[in-house]
Image (tube, rainbow over all chains, first blue to last red; front, side, top):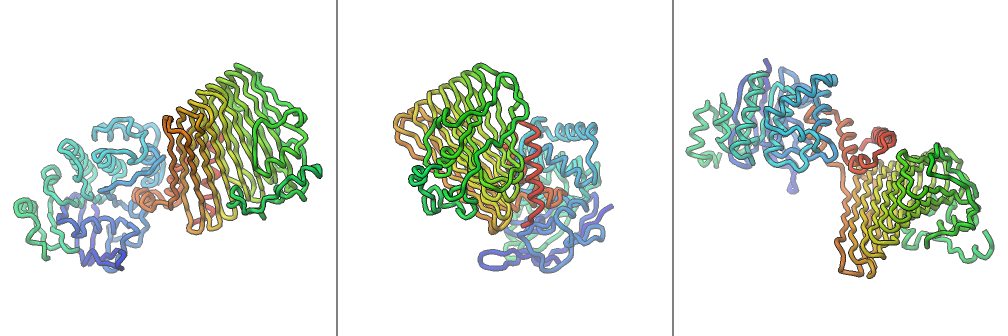
Length: 250
Length: 362
């Protein structure tokens, strides 16, 4: 059982016009096995929330705390956060030329587990995870995210999540750029990891479409850099009908 | 050197175009006629397989096969009384690389003249390894008879005191293929001129380079490809990284397509990765085309800083910063190194780069 606690989080980003506050006091608790949908209009600060506590250098945390099972996440380096059990599936995964997927996965798993996986079981483990995500085995010889389609990038993110076995995963607009088939495959992957590993999920999305495949326990509406409304799955239905118009001035 | 040649010799000052990037005061006198150049053969073979012969010849019996205006190379031609001649028999298929080695000379300036004659339809890989101290001016001419296929690899793994100025000139016959790898990871000042001319149609050259400069190192590579005959091909791909505020690299890529070179197909590329703020990489691609009747001609040059997004991505998967940097740098060079296909050298070069990466942190 893990618990991610975000309290009073304020985050700024440096722009050409100077420092700009994006998050203005976010409070959120995610426990193992829970799925929290963070929904909101573009520019509301949803992705900043994801990147800032994954430790992206662009964002400065000006106030607040983030703890994972009591440990201060904000005091950790980016790799330490991953080792502590946080995983961020990115909206725009980064290309790393010349580094093969298989080398990358093995290096990451070795770092997270603290020892190199046994060659014998590792090959099978990767193969099985790839098959479940309908990924061609040849995929592992390609360079990380280089020339990947939108769907391939998202599958590759979920593949990593499956192998790295985090406690809490943040899925940042994982549904963007996916057609219906890819969305189903990716969502099934997320549900599988959740079932197997009692994963806590923060699902960041603009649209309700993905919520048909990944059922949220809680829905949080994000606007103007803070959570403005919270509820159960019924809140998503309301958003689907009414959109975000009523939060525009929040 | 005779008085006569001395009077004809124009000591470069550093203001001339070909020298404007070179720190002349660090050439250890290789360009200065007042400094005498030691005249000996310093390269040692490891194994010479059958089909290959290595001899030391009197330099004047083997006059240069090509023209040069480089003042230091002119000095090499005038000062060297001996020539190391490597001959590959016609039709010979040499599967194992032929290694020539030069280890720890000293810091007194010397010259080297080398010639490689590849017979008709021969196949071979030749590797020249330079390491330790040394101050050396060198010319290697590689003459590829028709249908031959030569891979020519030079490794500059010098100490941080070494000075190495060299011209590698390939003369490529009809239907012959020349592939070169210039790998410069050590030395105080290294200035290499990989140059190519073609003798017949169907000839091709692939010129690859890798350099990694750290503090106090100046690595300069001046590629020159001369397309004069029709139907020849060239590809140039040099990649470099710089780590340390006083690291300097220069890459010049001159490709000339003369009016007689119809059907030329050429592309040249240089990429530089700056790992610290003061480091400076000059990159000057230059394409001159005198005929429109070609297959293709292009060039590209990029110089950029280390991508923090890549670092963040790798670290967000648990990979520590140091290891993530190594992965990215290895990835950057993989395109060149993985083509080399000589495993012990691939491993050695990458390990050296790893070592130099951990020495300096940005």
